[in-house]
Image (cartoon, rainbow, N blue to C red; front, side, top):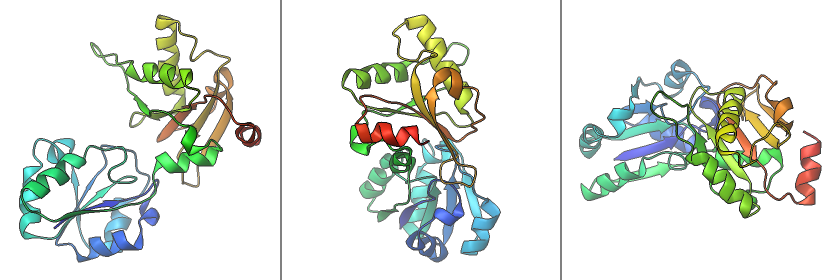
Length: 243
C-alpha cells in the first residue's frame, strides 16, 4: 500500500487526523520537501507518529521512484508531502505506476495554498491559470509565467504566482520587473497593484495589498506568493482595502 499524506500549508499541526493515523500504521514513512516550502519540524513530526521519517530527494520520487513502489508492494508505505499531495506536485505519475503494478495507492488530502489564498479576499472562481516564478540562472532565464499573467489579464482573471522555493516577495517582484523591462507589456510596473502573501497559515503570516513600489519594501519571506489581480468585484475591492 502506498499512501500520500498532505502536510498542510504550514507545519505538523496542519495534518489531518486521518493522515496522522495512516502514518502511525505505516511500516515505512518518507517525506519530501522539494516541491514546496514547509515550516514544520521533522523532529516533532517523528515524535507525533512515533516513527523515523526518511527525507526523499527529487530523484527518489522521479527517476528512482521504482524503489518506493517496490517497498509499497510488500509493505505499508506513507509519503508526507507539503500542502495537498496532488495540487502543485508531479506525484500523479507515481500513482499511475502503482496502478500498473497492482499496488494499492491512495491520497489523504490537506490544506493547500490554492484554496487558502482566498484569505486575501479574492474569489477562487476568478483566478485563471497559476504559474511559478523561477529563479533565473546562467543560460536559463524562463519567463513563461509572465505570459500566464498576460493571458489571465486579457480574460479579467487573477493570477496566482507561486514563488520558487526559498524566494521571498522582494526577489519575486524584482524578477517580474526585470522581465517587464525586457518585454515592455506593462503588466508589472511600479504603480501596478498586487497582493503579496508570506508564510500563509503561520503565526508570521503576512498579507499585503498595494502598489509594487510599496510592497517591494516589505519584508516578506519564503514561502511566499504574489497575486496579480484581474477585474475586481466590488466586494473584492472592499476586502483588499482592509488589508
